[in-house]
Image (cartoon, rainbow, N blue to C red; front, side, top):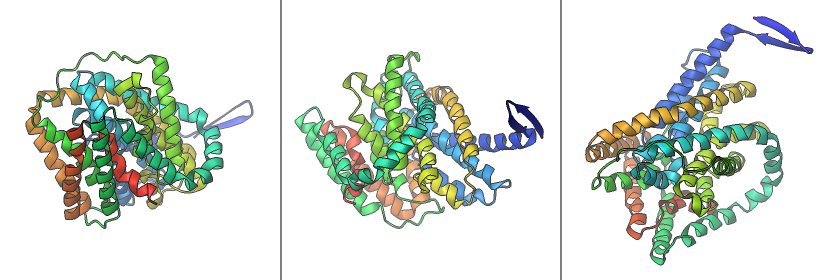
Length: 415
């Protein structure tokens, strides 16, 4: 170990320890890449799988914890790739799945990938200077928000329906909201019997609501068309403003229990100015998804309660909460994710575009059924089938798929 002093501050450097920590963070980032690119795999399922295997990983528990957080962070960057290329989103990316998919079908997938990377990357960068004031603000208003959370969620649900552009669209949105809400009330708390201890109903629910319908519709389509250049149509100021909005929404998610990234992103859709269109949706929802990782960590320190599946898994693994190390792992993982989204995403789009899309759609549908069975057992397959039927409603009426977020909005609004 080397020790140096400057301006009265002693700095200790241990190259071997730093190299070991870096190896763990990189290993976690690699797992996040894999999980982010698997269609329909939710970050919470991935985190619980990591927690289940954490005890068998050789190495200091604090470094295992850093690896888990790095995996979760990279996952929030890379999960946009299957959402764009296949239309099968992680739940947190469900709100942007259709707008982003529209960009891909218009040949603007490479642009969408870069917009998502900027939305996520800027969210991490903005979260640092905003950390202290936002923590103090949200902690102060937390009791009021929590007491009126049902009203806020109900307002979001009403806004999703009433902002549809036609009467037919409003009817479809209302039906989708009610059907998905009923589905959530019935299934969210069902006991599952998956093959692994990371089961739950979220994966089959969201795979059925948002993934399967897109794949079924794609059976009659022409697949992913050739993609144009990566030039971005949004100005720097627009990207910055949208990222800031996503960051603040992510802060709400990080501190308020019961509000997921998916719900915050859905609410944020109502705040995106019409002129930004699908591009604005991609930036702001990516920002919400990734900012949540940072602010949830701050909330854990300020309030002592984990707010994300990754942090719950971190606590269950028994890893000590060494916050400087955890924040450093988030920063490094964010840098890795920022670089990988366009590079891996471009290749992903290219490969998907070269495959017969009907064959690919059937294969991914089979994967989603298998994933539902592995994570939630036979009941998960049933939930997936029911969610698929509900997920087919919005296209029939020309309404937005975001109304399917009633699966979470309705149960939470009802307490």
